[in-house]
Length: 364
Image (cartoon, rainbow, N blue to C red; front, side, top):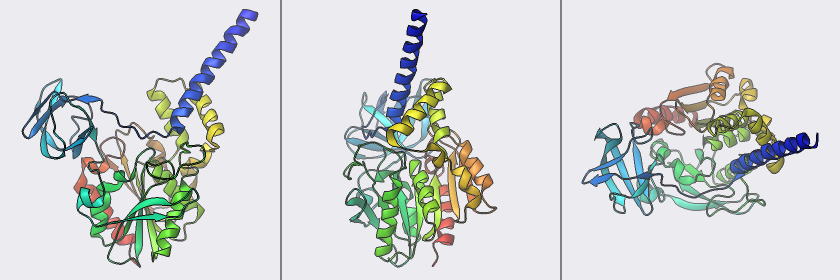
């Protein structure tokens, strides 16, 4: 009996330990860069890379390495093990054989001026944890609807670059915000990621700032966890929100954690333990982040992009959200690509849909 009890104790400890580790990963603030690919060959105008789902995906991408960045064009050759892509420009550094690189779907780096040629102001807005940095790309008039862009978990403001030119062309001001625990932003007291459960307050503070600068309404534009934050703010007070744009949004953290656990080959009972540990560690009620429960009460026009090969966020809750919302309230565009790559796989189509939506909801 004592041996049996010892085995049970050890098993419980192992399950609890794995659950604690997985929960810790979910709450971890991590802004490090990884370069998982090695350049097989580099020639004027082309680069040869190992063939994998990222390197062979059609669309618009950048290739990044420590201290460098290249803009990639279409596939122009290759074999079963390698893919040759056109290099349209190398705005930073030198691309060389043997370099450790990564595919970057954000495409751009720097600030709106250096990346896109857009004039902007580096501003701060008051938040619960201190002065928060943001980029303000002015529009035709500050007394109009503002677009407030909010990036995803462990990302930064550069994630919002891909939409900036399209938003700017509509004449609407765009405020791309940082939030707690971002690089260069104030930290939370525990230095942990709360999956939007506390971070939404920073987005709410950004709305107050926009209003103080003349905004007559806002469109909330969230990528991934930024989408969960946008919908949480909308539920708290929809009165000043004219529209919502969601790009690969987290519509249900519980389903998304299940998906990520499955990807790590964790049995579901261990993922369930991890979710309970996570709820305890950061104080989040995961049920509150199942947005499908609130879809029938949605009264704010919403444009939502999902991608077919999203390996990060569970997609089914997004489809269910669109179906449960009142008719005509959600414009759902199911695109190709991985997480937040709807723009990369079809920039023109993405921007047409975004422009049409903003032109409709951004009017006074």
